[in-house]
Image (cartoon, rainbow over all chains, first blue to last red; front, side, top):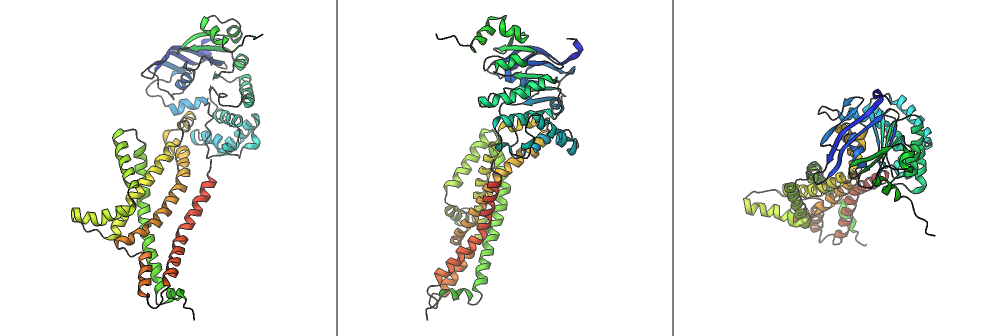
Length: 251
Length: 225
């Protein structure tokens, strides 16, 4: 791809918590419309990496450019940057005191100060897309985990972000609800959204990704197209990791 | 004819006197509750700080006030202050001081509990939407804190109203004391007036506290997450 299409550039990102290094010299480019899936063993820094990108975690050194602008600079207004970077969390984190619709409208009406009617119309359209229009007046406690997560995705989408970050969004779900959430994400990928996804669902990673990034021990060990990565990983660490997802026949 | 003790209520201005006593009870309670809410919110915020010094001090304060029976606190302030510092506090002032000290401790703990019960992720998902800190508090944190807090603090208020009956012991003439005076004054003419007076006082307390209780229950149900 051409240089000009770069949406997000991460250069030599370094993050530590004092006692140990979490991310070591991580560099990564994400182009417009690209779906990057981060995989790796637990504790390898995948989630922290995502959280650094929208400033939920401070970093010790390195640079992150969004649309060519360094967002690590001191004068960064995170509230503005975060409107361009949507994020969905593992634990959904809907606001329990608001209905589904109010959850979704909070961002557009209070942060972006958009017209409520227009925002409502869009919220309803998005809810319809994820199959939840009939639940718009429900409270989060009345929804299943999968439904909550789909609402959380809509809540991030309505801000019209340039890139969406998904932090293990299916990890807290019952197995039968994983699919409905992944389907929404597949559909987003198809419609050309730029996404960074942290997941443990390997089949899904393979299906949705344009690029797989394998992290281990706080550094990027391998990147590659999904077919290459899953069929013939170049590094030993990656093949060992992938091996944990398969079982040898007992008989 | 069987002498009905209830007539003592309608002798002279006895009933009005009881209501007057109730008014003293309500005034002292409301002043204490109001002060407790103000100081309690501040205390609760201080208690969530990670500073070990404030943590230790607030902890000691809370435990001290909770372990002491309110009556002991009343005696301590009313008699103790006079003895130790030569300050002559009126019963009413002592009562407000003690109930404010107690209410602040309890309210502070409620506020602390409500604040720390909001998961960190609520702040983060607000931030991820691009909200400023002030917006996160206004739209996400404070509404949720209040929902947890209001039913609990209403219950605390009713407890405080009821407990003010102890201030009889430091000579404040509130509803219970007025009742005792009426009973004493009619001991020979209406010997069984005690039952009627105390039943009346029971209903007066009930009438004051019950609406609060109902309200707290309703809100709790409505805001249950």
